[in-house]
Each structure stands twice: as C-alpha cells, then as structure tokens.
Image 1 (cartoon, rainbow, N blue to C red):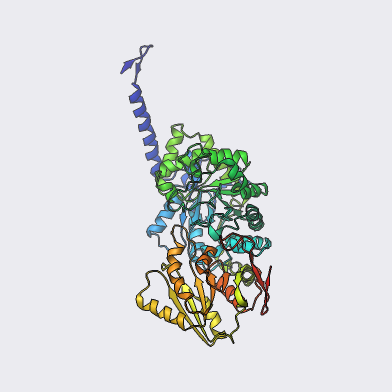
Image 2: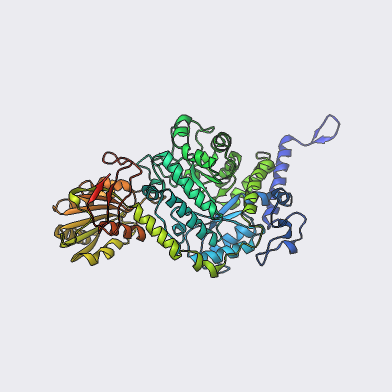
Length: 613
C-alpha cells in the first residue's frame, strides 16, 4: 500500500488497473451465464414461448425507442446492433446450425438475422422459430439483387441490374423492386440488400459487373431510385450498396482489400453521384464497402467500413444521410485478413455503423464492444444513437404491432405468382441486347442450316444448365449440344471439336458469370476454346449469359448477343430473340473497349430484318 496525503492507504496505479480489469471481467462473465432480463421485468414474464412480445414493448402498437432503451441493459442494446447468419433448412433442436442461430437470438439477443440460400418453406419455418425465441422482434434481411429467387429458388427471378438498364425503361426497375419486396414481405423479410449503386466503369471488376446498372452514374441513380421506390411501396426497406462505390476495383473484397487511389473530387463526380441522388430521394439504408481510400481516409490503411471519415464525415455530414448504416459481411477477407473480429466490431461502431453484419465471431465481437463501452473507448450515447435508429425502424415497420410470424399457408398465393412471372419474363425479353449481326444472320432461318452445334462454355466449376438447346431443338433438323471448359478430359474435348467441325451453324454460349469470392480469368477460360470455333467457316453466334465483356473472346463471331444471366428465363428470352419470336431492343450500358461503346445495340423486329439504331 502507498500512503496518501490524507494518511489513507492508496492502491498503486498498476493494482488499480488490475482490479478494474478484474471487475470488467467479472461483469463479462456474469453476462455470459445467460441472457440478461429487461430492467424491472420478472424472468417468468419476460420469457417468450408463443411469439407474443412483452407488454412493455407496446404503446398502442407503436414502440417509443427511448422508453425501450431505458428498459434494456447495455448488453441488450449492443446486441441490437448485430445481425447474424440464418439458413432455411430442416433443423432438429440439437442440430448444431440451429443451436448457433438459437443461441445468437435467445442468449446474445441480436437485433436481426440475415438469411442465406434455402427452401421457401424451410426459411419461413426457421423465421417463425427464431421470432418466437426473440424477446424484441427480430429484424430480418436478405440479399435480393436478382429478386427473391437470388436466395430462394422457388421465388421470382429477375434480370440483373445491367440487363434492366439495357431495356431503357426505368419502370422495369420499379416493378422489379415492388415484386421483390412483396415476396420478401410474405417471407417475413424487413430489409433487402439492394439496389447496387456502384458505377461499373472498370471492365476488370471481378465482383460488381452486371450487378451494376451502368458505367454512367446518372443511369445508375435513375434505375436505382426506381427500384428503391418499388421496394418502399411494398413496405420493405431497401439498402444501397456499396458505399462509397465498389465499381472501379479489380479486387473482390470477399477475397482481399481493394485500394482506390481517388480524391474527393473524383468520388464526388462519379462514385457518389448515385448515392447522393438516392439520399435526396429518401434512401433508408446504406451498406458500406470494405475498400480502402487512402487519399481521403482518416485512417489510410482501414477499409471504409471502419473509417469514421467515410461513414460519419462523408455519409452523415456531407451527404446528410439519416438512415441506417450497415456493414457488408464482416467475415469477408477485406476485413478478416487485417482485423480480429472484436477489433473490427469496435472500429465499426466507433466509425458510426448502426448494424454490424455477420461478424466472424459473434461472442468476441459482442464482448469487445461491451468492454469498449465500459472502458470509455465507446460512449454509451454512441450505442444509443444506433439502437434508437434500429428500434425506430422496427416500430415503423410494425414489428411491435403483432407477432412476426410468417403465414406459411399464404406463401403460394404471394410468391412467384403467375402475374409476377409474366412481368419478369417480359423484362427478360426486353433486356436482350444485340451488338453485332453480320450478313443479317439473325433471326435464324431454319431452312438455311442443316446441322447446329450449341457449345456451352463454362469455367468448369459448375455444369451449365443448357436451356437454349432444349428450346431450339424443335426448329432445326439436327441439333447437338456439347460442353467445353478448362480441365475437360481429352475424349469430351475431341467430341466437342468434332461437333463443331461438322456443323454449319455454331452457337457459342458463354455461361461464365461473375460470382462473389470466385476469381475468374475470362481469357484463360474462353481463349483456348474460341480458336476451334472460327476455323470451320461456319456461321457463329456468340452469346454471353453473364458478363458482357466475354464478347471480347468471341470477336470472330458473326453475331453478338447479351443475355445477362445463365438463369432459365434469360436463356428462353435469348432463344426467342434468335428465332425471331420476340423483338430485340436492348442497349449496352457499359463500354467494351475497343469494340463497343455505351448505347450500342441493334434492333430486330420479330421475323424481320434488323434495324440499326
């Protein structure tokens, strides 16, 4: 002991710090024993078993965020800021996947869950099970850039964003947003992570590509806002991503940390344009990008998600954004390669993030934020600011009006309805874009070609679904379908070459689509295959069902057709265009140097000669 001036014993500073850490550790251990109860509420009352919510949470159906927060512990408030992964599947009570989801909701009391892929009925049932376990209604979210079918195959699939913009009609973006959100709502989803407002002006971008509307920021803004309006009309929250812009990168942030060497002027005149316009139009939520911007960042080596200049100064102050700010997945390598889960969560909260999405280690992240508040590194008012926004949105969405239970019996009436499918099919038809048509090859004349070889080109990671050959086979005398991909066995390669050499019409179909967290080199994938296609003297139609830039590997083709996606409805739309069953009116929304520029496109009337616009 050390004697103080008053004669009382004073602990050494090192001992004082040790005791403080011991006290914090004790508080943390106590909090880990089980869920803390709402202040002043008996455990027997607080327990949720039938989906009903605490009377404390209701005030004539509308919750007062500040009243709710006054009844919550610090750990409960921090929990509201976290969104964890959920999956639609059949899970017994002792299934490890279910136990993790259940623990996150019942014990850690997270504020929301984000569903990955799953069966429609399984997801609905898991949603109901989790909502029944949650003391405060869960905020449920899901990625739905291509419609609800992006994650739920039984739902309605829509053309990717770039194909939507190719139609030249922003009302299609509105319809896509409206129908997607209606189906989301039927599934108990409150927030969808779309639209993508990135400006795709880099052909080498490995992750955005057709997810973006265009390389023109005004086009991105116009179509993104139309989609956002449709989502809002269905009572669901849209989320613009990936702020401040992921379009001009050549690294996928799922795999590493992209670095953008741009100053504020460049960002303000390009990347920020769609976000600025969307915020003025009432954008409710923004997702941050895990990209470093050393020219403007406060912490040059930090991803934008963890930098207060990006989230607070740029988004909140400069652009006057007042809605929810949510991170991209915190388990992505753009974060995980450089920060531990707890450190990343603390930095995100300090930067001004409201919702921390998919932490790599939930317990570590929650504990780190809790300790940061106890130590004074993060103020409790900072936590309150985010929780107030989250609870306000939950109240606005009606989460406190009634139990958030999905009506499973109504799903077949509300999801993938005939009306929804007809609209999606029509948009797909309008999206098809013809860039080249030498010798008026299209529409195809069945009398002109005896043998047709359809060559399905892929990266070899997945077997492509060949809907084009099935659709076209009834129109030609002899149709053969073959596959070519890197690593193919010699026998299959020789069979494919033989089919190509024997055909008088070759339809080369690139199924190479950009997929997150998968590095694809188009030249390595398509280049060696193309040599065989142009040595026969036969007519060749080159079709891309994914990245439009793949036409560069089909330069020798007589016709170039963009189909935007390998999905069945896009393949059927492409086939109808080839056969002259539907008009072709799409226009390219990116430049493809050195052969095509933005706005290129050739119009075809059904069964008639082409009209070059």
